[in-house]
Image 1 (spheres, rainbow, N blue to C red):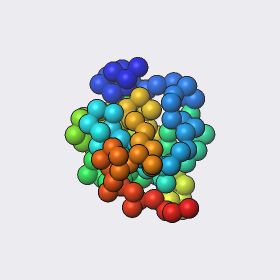
Image 2 (image 1 turned 120 degrees about the vertical axis):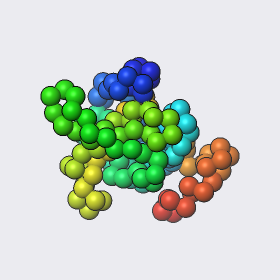
Image 3 (image 1 turned 60 degrees about the horizontal axis):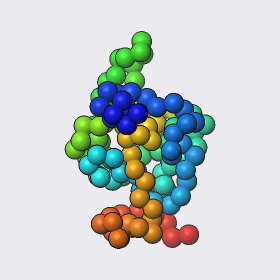
Image 4 (image 1 turned 180 degrees about the vertical axis):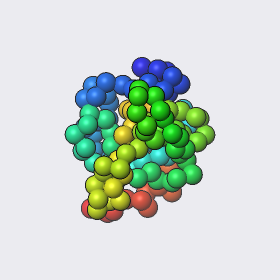
Length: 132
């Protein structure tokens, strides 16, 4: 499934993937390069069956491309460094968070828990979280 999604631009089944209903505090990184892409602070339940985020950590880490496959025009999201297919971005996200919905395949990302950020070399990303 990972190869199919990441390198063949596939899509994993909705509601049958690792992170669609995962809301632990932390960051999501590109599975191949380890580059940070999204935080749990920007994750929301869009009821679509895939992980959804209102924004990326940095627009420098993602590429957006026109995707005219499957008889429709969408915006594909890829990882800048690894050229991994991540998913698509749509403008039907929460208005109060900018209106975007990054619909991402779990197969293309890996979760790093907040309490392991420093240990795993992602210390600079702890500042992205509200202390609750």
